[in-house]
Image 1 (tube, rainbow, N blue to C red):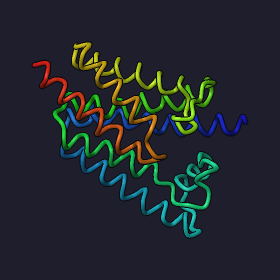
Image 2 (tube, rainbow, N blue to C red; image 1 turned 45 degrees about the horizontal axis):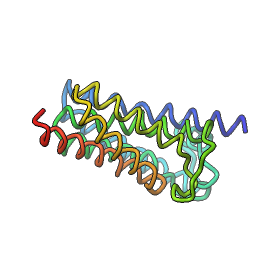
Image 3 (cartoon, rainbow, N blue to C red; image 1 turned 90 degrees about the horizontal axis):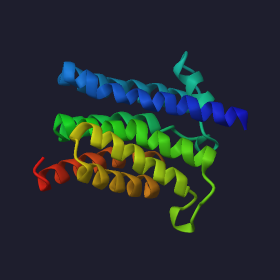
Length: 196
């Protein structure tokens, strides 16, 4: 159990690093896009080598330490979808909506996972193994992030609800793609609807 907790904390610590993308994009959007693409390409190459039996210093050993039991024996897709989710959000949305999307990916998704894994007790059948506590954590963090950026509670609540629903029903590592796109699109549409 201790190893599982440690691995999950390391996973989410790495996951949270994607929150640097909006700050980097504010410095230079093109360079940030290239950095994300390069990171996805590099990880795909290294993970492909690990998958066929070749170990790469640092990255392969780190991947092996944080690999979830369900992912053993297969290509670990999470970092690829994480980078692509942030990249797509940055390219598709205005800077404020992209920031919401990427921060929801970094912080709300992590809050949902950690809360659900360590504090989650209520697991309704319709959440397919996820906890109500994790879903509520996702809502709260996403809404706070959105309110901090847009300063409008209506946009924050809408983004929080959509983020919670998407995170609750997303399929494994693909929530790294779907969650930021849903959060960014919701923030964009809500800001337009409420003339913010």
